Amino acid sequence: MFVGSRLSTVLLVLAAMIVLWYVATTITGLVGPARLPQPLEVWQSFVAIATDGYGNGRLHQHVLHSLKLVAMGFTVAVCVGVPLGLWMGHSRRAEALINPTFLLLRPIPPLAWIPLAIVWLGLGDAAKILVIFVAAFVPSVINSYTGVRNIDKPVLEAARMLGIRRFSFVREVLVPGSLPMIFTGLRLSLQASWTTLVAAELIGALYGLGSILNQAAQDIYPAMIMVAMIFVGICGATTTWLLGQVEARAMPWRHERALQ
Amino acid sequence: MSLARPMTDRERFALTCVGTLGFFCVWYLAAFFQFAPAKFLPMPHEVASKLVQLCGQPFAGAILPEHLLASLKRYAMGFGLAAVIGVPLGLLMGRFRWLDRVVSPVFDSLRFIAPVAWVPFAALWFGTGIGGPTLIIFAGAFPPCLINSYRGAKSVEVKYLEAAAMLGIGSYRTITEVLFPAAVPSIIAGLRIGAGLGWMSLVGAELIVANSGMGYMIVKGQSAIATDIVMAGMIAIGAVGVAIDVALRKLEARLLRHRQEN
Image 1 (spheres, each protein chain N blue to C red):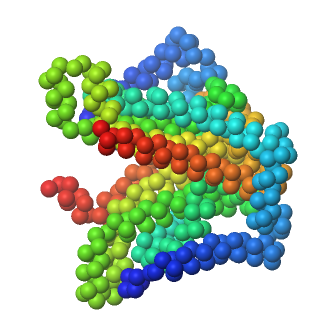
Image 2 (cartoon, rainbow over the protein chains, first blue to last red):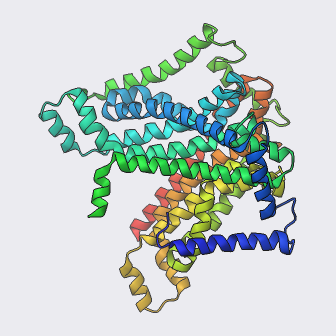
Image 3 (cartoon, rainbow over the protein chains, first blue to last red):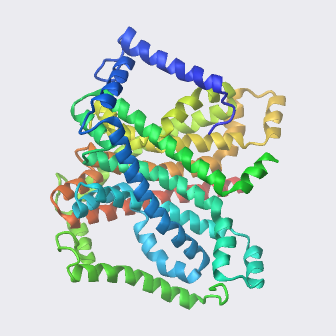
């Protein structure tokens, strides 16, 4: 995010952090093991969960399970949310009709849906997909809507004057014009998906990164908590990076402009 | 294409009414035809009356206003800390490149960890009373506060900084008198985003580790399979979130108006 961070400085700072951590926990013992685990313990926990498993499964099973749920909830939310947002942005009538429901439901934080989802669907995967859907849906709709509204009016008028067909209008004007905002929405949706999934899994799940966190918290096993947190971060960063790659492919003209 | 005929105000009003009524009609019909058992899908007016009832009758150890107060106390602490640390740090990072280089890698490597994932450590370090949830609210609200204040400081026109340097004012006054005023719109935008994320993180924290508060109330409603309590709690949480946003928007308008007058 920030400018001016060279790779060497980044590595230096991260190395310094790990040394500091090692000194504080292992050499001097300033921070007790019940509060912050030692680096070696974290590594051992990582090896333990990767080979023997912890909390109903091995690490890759937990990671894959969480990834699967995020992918499902996110995909459904995007496939419904983006077209809905485009439609609301394009048609004032659709906006007037749909907006009230949206305004009523939008202020409720996605995490507050978790208890309702559990009451309705139980502790299984369906409840998690529902809350991820709710979390990812709102940013998709809002940003697609804003994207359409930001298209220059002359472009819309020119398209109409040239007698464009409805289908090509959507494909050649509406979608490309709002694509930058759509991707902003997708990035926010993805972030919200991970947050809600972790929360939902913390409350009750058999598999998943959140369930490792929950299990480790109950066992008072700080090293395992840290392993799970690190993997929550890695999964979030990886999926965000993937989305960035898709974005670069989908909008090659932006990349070209950046090069010029 | 609907662009062809402009919509009249009356048509707009009618469609808005239809949309609002439609939402409640669908809800009523679903409940009426026993789409789900009444225990799982109460009717809208039942939820509303439950909301009123919760203000007088304690549930999960307290009445609704007390839960709300407990939540707001934690929220004020967590969000306050995030603003008090995040905004100055962002400005300093915008001013001093070395600080930027030192903090950015740490910040970037922690940024992708969802705020709720801090819950176990928060409970371990600060308990489940006020401290634990406060840390999670902080984790949710801190990044936007920092990022926006940093961006605001970075967007200051160089000529102002050069003028300040030429006039020989020190770093402290450069920050308080040049960077901060220029960054105010961006900072406020960041505070608003942070306030929203903080409120959401609060609910998450209270769902998992707390012994009072709105999140605690709805999770207790869930274990009692009292859907009306869960829904009433969701409405109250949403309403407070809106109130916080409106308050910050008012503050924003006032500050920006003040700027234009100067």
